[in-house]
Amino acid sequence: MRTQIRNKAGTELFSHDGDLREALEAAGEAGVELTQAMLDGANLSGANLEDLDLRQASLRGANLRNANLADIDLSGANLHEANLRGANLEHAEMHEVVLADANLEGCNLEDARLIGANLVGINAQGANLEGVDFSRANLEGANLEGSNLEDARLSEANLSRVNLQRANLEGVDLDGANLTHADLRSANVERADLRDANLEDANLRGANLERVQFDRANLTNACFDKANLERSSFAAATLTGATFHRANLERVKGLTMPPPSE
Image (tube, rainbow, N blue to C red; front, side, top):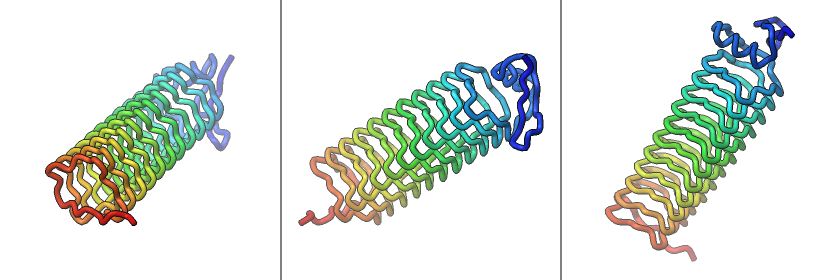
């Protein structure tokens, strides 16, 4: 059986004797560019697609569970509702990729680049997101519970209503990020940069916020109850309605406690 891979215009990009999985693996080995390839709904579970060039490809609803996608280029690709559970996406280039409602549970995306990506509603529970560049990405409503985001870059990202319970955000860059209504209960946010961030109505109860920079942040109605805020900084932060019941405020800088709510 000969498999043909075509782009959105119907032009053949590559053909190979074998099934789609074998054709893609052969294309990767040959260094063939598969820009705008049409692969909607493809079953590529466990496939080895390392180093493959799939820029602007369409993989809507594709099954990539446990696939090896290390160093792949998916810039501008559409993976809406794709299943990437347990996949390896280490060092992947995914600039402005569409992954809305995709399953990324348990994925390894260490040092991947998802600048400006659409990640609305993704499930990345327990994923390894260490060092990922999510700058300006949209993660509204995403489930990142228990994930590892150590040293990730999320500057100016949209994290509204995101679930970050028990996640590791040590050293994360969240400068200017939108975290309204975000759930960070029991998260480790030590040394994170949250300057100019919006955390209105965010829940940080029991979180480790040691040495976090909240300078100029909007913390209106945020909950810091039982949180560890040792050596954190609140210079020029908005704290209207914020609560700090039983929080550790040892050596906190620039904190003017808000008046108790009536």
